[in-house]
Image 1 (tube, one colour):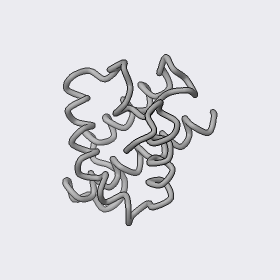
Image 2: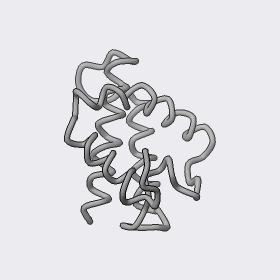
Image 3: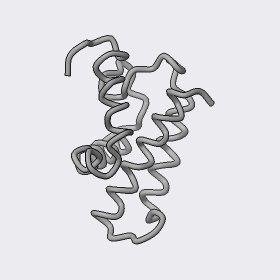
Image 4: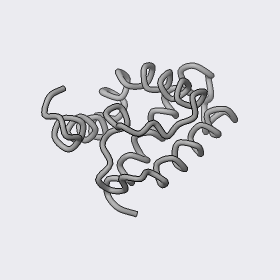
Length: 108
């Protein structure tokens, strides 16, 4: 597994964990819905046609998530995104770096 995919997987896993704890009140692990979303997200990540050269999902030209799952992951990202700054600052900085400099657009 390459570095980009590993970081992307860690980031989405952490975001879903933050969302599940905050919205669903889980203390450890994930609720069944969030566990299913995480499994789906990982599946999509590893099937990405761009491989290790993939942009961040928000800047991608290919929408590989089914509409219902896309809505769910957007809710997760809206909730967990701002909280990532203080819960996982290193992952957040890596994501912002990739978004700004590795996704074909040099602006936030």
